[in-house]
Image (cartoon, rainbow, N blue to C red; front, side, top):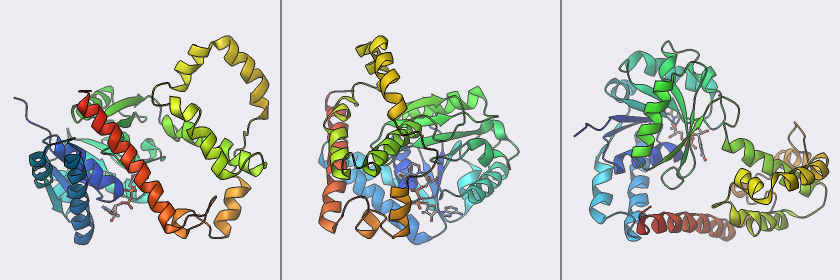
Length: 315
Ligand SMILES: NC(=O)c1ccc[n+]([C@@H]2O[C@H](COP(=O)([O-])OP(=O)(O)OC[C@H]3O[C@@H](n4cnc5c(N)ncnc54)[C@H](O)[C@@H]3O)[C@@H](O)[C@H]2O)c1
C-alpha cells in the first residue's frame, strides 16, 4: 500500500478550509496554517458543517463525516506546516508581495522534493515564484469556489515548472476526486476565467447599451445556452452546429461585440457610488437580505444535487 502524501494548506479562509477538506476526506493528513486561532476554529467548524451536509444527503457516510476533520491539524507556525509536507497549497489573500513572501519562506522551510502550489485566481505563477530559489517545483492549482463541490482545478505550468511537477499535481488531484486540467501557459485568467470574464464583459455591455436590463440578461443566459453548458462546451458546440455556420455567424456578429480593454463605466459608476452588490444590498440589481439568501441557497442546493447524483450514479 502506498503512503498517502502529507498535505499542508496555507490560509484557512473561504478556499483554504474547503481545500483542506478535499484532501482530508480522501484520507490525507492535512496541516492547516493561519495567522489567528479564531480563523482556524472557524475553518474547522466550516469543514464539519460541509461534511454534515454531505452525510445528510448520503454523499458520504456519517463515520467519514466524523473521521475526516480529525485528520486536519491546525497550526499558527508556518514552519510546522512546511517541514514535513509533500504538497503545500497556498490560499492567502490575493496580494503579490504576500504570496511571494510566503513562497520564499516555504521554499526555504520545506523538503526539497515537496511541490508548492498557489491557488491564486488571476496572478502570474511565474511572478509569485520569482523570489523563490527552487522554482521548478512551484505550480498553480486554481480551485473554484466552493472547492469541495466544483470538480475543476486548473493546473498552471509557470515559466520554470517542470513537467514532473505538473504530472505529480494532476495525479494527486485526480486521486482526491478532482478534475484537473493542464493550463500550458501562465496567462492572466488561465483557461476558464478568460471565458467567464469575456461573457461578463458582453453582459455588462448589453446593459450599458440599454439592450436589456440585468435580470433579463441573466435569464437569457440561464434559460438558453446556460442549460446546455454542463453537457456541451463551446468548442464541441461549434463542431456540432458546423464550422461553416460558425464562420457565417462570426463574420456577421463579431464586429458588433464588445472588445473594450477597459472596465465598463457601468461598473465604475456603481463602485464609485458604493453599490457593490450583495455586500451593500445594491449593485447591478437590488439585493435585500432574503433575496441574497435565496440566491446562495439555490446555488448550494444545485451543487449538492449534482454531487449527490454523481455519487448515486457511481460516477
Ligand atoms: N474566493 C473565491 O471564490 C476564490 C476562488 C478561487 C481562488 N481564490 C483565491 O484563493 C486565495 C484565497 O482566497 P479566499 O477567498 O479563501 O480568501 P480569504 O480571505 O477567505 O482567506 C484568506 C485566509 O488567509 C489568511 N491569511 C492572511 N494573511 C496570511 C498569512 N500571512 N499567512 C497565512 N494566512 C494568511 C487569512 O487570515 C484568511 O483566513 C486568493 O488568492 C484568491 O484569489 C479565491
